[in-house]
Picture (cartoon, rainbow, N blue to C red):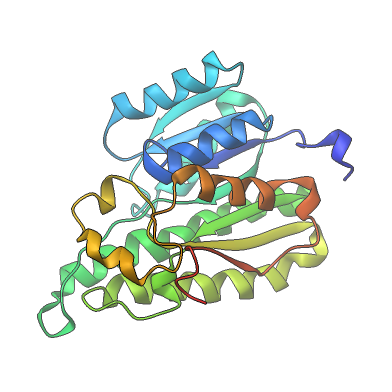
Length: 248
């Protein structure tokens, strides 16, 4: 598909899009011409603010409530987005995620399962649902938001690391399965990004980052924007780190 006809006649769905990295991604995709469904689990006001910002800039957006860990959420959110915009979801960003940090000897079953369900299983279900329409259209973009923790150890986050590492391998495998159908699936692995989730983290940990600073949500969104663009049509199964050199 040529750049002049991009984006295609479809919409984008961003899970966990009400704040932080997800909100920046939603704004970026809208600026690139995608109608964007902004999913949120809690914080309806924050999601509506993102929608208002997109619309004020001339874009189209809708806020959609839904807990991605619910097995029924993928079908419900896709139907809602496609009904609202009247076109199929041809760009999916699996961004929703949670953390339940604890050292492995003390990690509970609930802490393990909650993180796996939200950060990994939900991405699988949403990707599976997205591929139905994308394979029919013979075009589509899926970006899974992993983490540098999926590439290197971080004590106290064995559940989070397992989910994010699993997400990377799921991305690579699914990508080669559908590459011939014009659909790309890639992962972005952020490092320390300045968001609400990192506000209470010990800032001395930044000393381990070669760039000596935190990244911004907009820097992650720029990478997602590229992977969703027409120019990235030959990029699939890739993992793009956005971590100031932390995983180098």
